Amino acid sequence: MQPQDFHYNPNSISFADVAIEVCDATIPYVEDHLEEAGGPFLPGLYWCPWTGRLTEEVTPS
Image: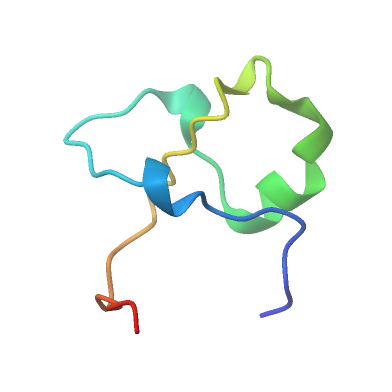
């Protein structure tokens, strides 16, 4: 996987039980539509990828 032009803010990550459709997008779609983020696409810059899953917990060193 190649690097993206965006990153998560570690202080803003949380888990949710439900999410609205406008915050769902794949990594490639977000990469291709960054200039639209914050408007109708990813309102408030809130991203909730429905296909995302936790695979490993990382402990800061």
